[in-house]
Length: 88
Image 1 (tube, one colour):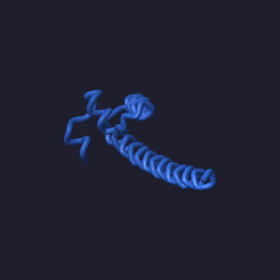
Image 2 (tube, rainbow, N blue to C red):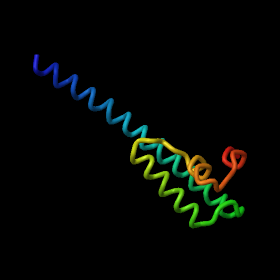
Image 3 (cartoon, helix red, strand yellow):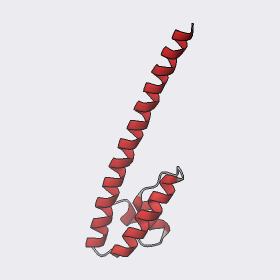
């Protein structure tokens, strides 16, 4: 009976690990996309480099608090871009 419980625990741990890996991959891709968006926004003159770095810091803080946030949302909250620019 104990062996069956350990097998269940091992299967659940493997599933949890796969979910965590998927979440990490998703966050990595979102960050990569946000960095690209931010660099373009700086290049086009929509925001300064300092604004971009501050917005990325705020984004990371929100993610640390389990509040998924895209860079465009932070820039909108900071009133640095308009809604149209944030959805480009």
